[in-house]
Image 1: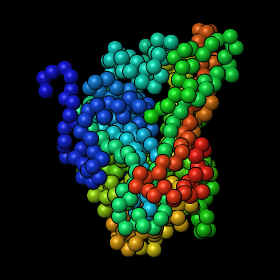
Image 2 (image 1 turned 60 degrees about the horizontal axis):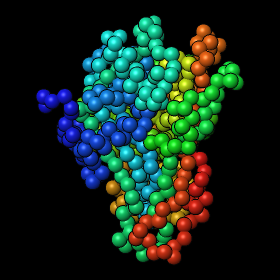
Image 3 (image 1 turned 90 degrees about the vertical axis):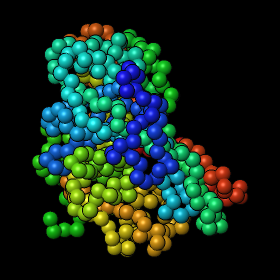
Image 4 (image 1 turned 180 degrees about the vertical axis):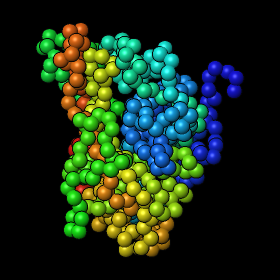
Length: 224
Length: 224
């Protein structure tokens, strides 16, 4: 690849090949981007003295990089450390006739790579902007942006979006045309939806400060 | 400990000691159980050829053990393998006056241990029951339970609940009494709630089969 835009197809590697549930795999980069854009909390996995550690943290992205808030794992991330970042949206339960066919409707992205610790202040500021805007669009230009001291105190990791595995499961259970269909049991899905609520003002806030539009507009909209 | 019930306090070990954000740590086993009981999807971390792998999967529990559906990670789990299981509930965004003080309200449990692969059919059946009832209370006795062949084809891991780290963040941002309060910016939280939707029948289902009460009752209730 020599162009500026990444390939629209995700490369299949030893880490991202779908070994199981092949029908759920996607190699479309648009699916990866959609899953990442639908959330703001990921699970960051690192190896610490030979043992796995999985911590939740916030992220943002651009076309090539995932930016991950790295404080919680900073003691283990010297740079070039292999990490795994997983983003999962749970869309509902799949209730089949048999327990064996039960499952979950979900969308997940698993990104493998070596974490690069961002040290350049300009790059760190740009990454933090992505991260802030990813969680709350409009908030970067509304809130006070980081000063030099705060920037230095923030650990931000970058991870290439090149090597990723996407899985999506949707729809009904799969035992509707098997012998269990004759059992006469109800089967289907139970959807799960995440919704933004009404903004709650900080009790320390003077009463005359209005909720900004980019926050107020979110109430009642779907997340995930 | 010689009694049958686990300690109500979580032990502090090298893995679970809270190094950062100490104020968010909980050593109360009731908090751990509440976080586990509020969800059904965890993130399972393993080390695979020296690299971390984090995959979403379903779980259940009893007083001493976490049961994790292990198929996705089965190729890497020979038994006695160190694993890390993390359950996270995202309760909302913390929107402060400064970007630096932004955060997330959340509840998370990180469980460390060596995965034990369950081979005994009776124990596996009991574990699967916990897992099924955890996701959908009432479903185990409604659906057709696993036969011998299905049981053998199911990979189930058990992980001791002894070593766990719990973190909880609630409430308003923390820069309400600092110099940034004078900026006149709105600050507060934007809550996020997961809600169960209306059951969706499998299109293959005959129209005369009613939604069972334990599924129908869930509509409109909160998850997480």
